[in-house]
Length: 182
Image (cartoon, rainbow, N blue to C red; front, side):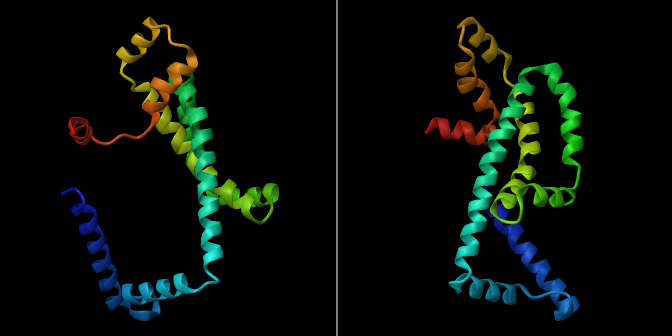
């Protein structure tokens, strides 16, 4: 049943798009059908494939870098409560800076090409991942941490078995219990 909500939202957005097209015409907007035709033609053009491949490669590399750096920042800050309380407003302030303003600096440092695309993509993800990881670590059940302390788990085991899994997104409690009962 949960799959219906996104489909209803997509259908509603397409209907609103079509209504806006009928209201303003070709002057300011293309219809959803015309956009789909152009997209199909672009995807069918063999000259488009290398660009699509490069975009996906830049996205994947930027995501991996953002994930690694974001977790490397967020997990220790979440584990050290006072450091996290000091760093969180700084991270939020950094995130509020429009990333487009950093693009000239990125071009100067990395040049034009794939490294600049990867760096620009990574910059978009580092701060949100850090903030989410920090808050996830802060909200770990204290019983898990006390148990780890009693078991005298080494730091790497604590990180691998308790801290990093807590930083990962999880599904809602209802779906998690349903998947466990299967």
